Length: 430
Image: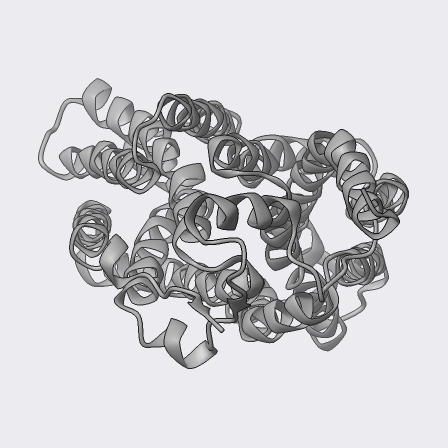
């Protein structure tokens, strides 16, 4: 065997040893990212005592993060595809950690807006970088578990972050809370820089080489799929629709569900926070279970696309049971479906992300993840705004709950009719 052949093989072996610890770092990174998204929500009632912010100004401050974060998803994905995951993830984490800590220096609305916009800029590289790393280092039989472990961070973040932020504020003050949250998150940069090696963008990853060897003659050469071909595929639009519908429910849970518990069931702040934590904590467990179960079926020869679509549709269907809360008056039933429907949605989480990686060529995956995450965060803007408007118009949570059911059914239809193997963009032989 030639030295040139041995070197890539040795590099692949070294990367394989660390890929699961790196996924652990990525999951912790997402927990930290969601800390930063919810800590301002807890701090604002205290901050307004000195900053004199009106409710409208508070809403603008809460939404500022999503504007820069959403706008930069696609550019960040293209950047990551172009230079690799190592440096973008490092610089992004550094920026958002500093911005989060600097929130402690806030003296007024404009300073707070700039800080929240910078926070969105820093976090914009996280999901494209993370998904590209997983796509390039995990094969189909393990990808659901890897994505599931990574995505649990998006639910553990709110489950842990809300009570943790409250504890730090009541024990110290809101300035100390932001300093601890911001500086503490930078710790992950140490293992990241030691464990993750620079990408060889010109080379195909080991995972892709193995996948191509199974389906293509060895003398064929891979020709990259163009952005135009990807965007013209019904798959990407089905994925965008499904992602929006999924995240509409998730962001409702992060923004309005605690108030639903308070208004509908007369819960105290402590009880509201506890039930919200149970909903997201249980969802985090189900995310991992759903990803691992799908991998188990795929490892035994079942078709990956069929399996992952099945789990995704099943998760959306379980989540849609929350609509029962608008049609029954039994308190126990309403509370049960509000919490358990979010658990059920966890069956879809790892699998709808992994399904995107299965159907889209790896060389463009960060750009596609950027598109997918843009849809996800547009859902955050729409969900928070539309839910508030519907409550103002109707005086209850019934219509917002029915609206969630509408989006979830629309997402199911998108996965059934648009996200199909025959519509997937395919690399062509040179």
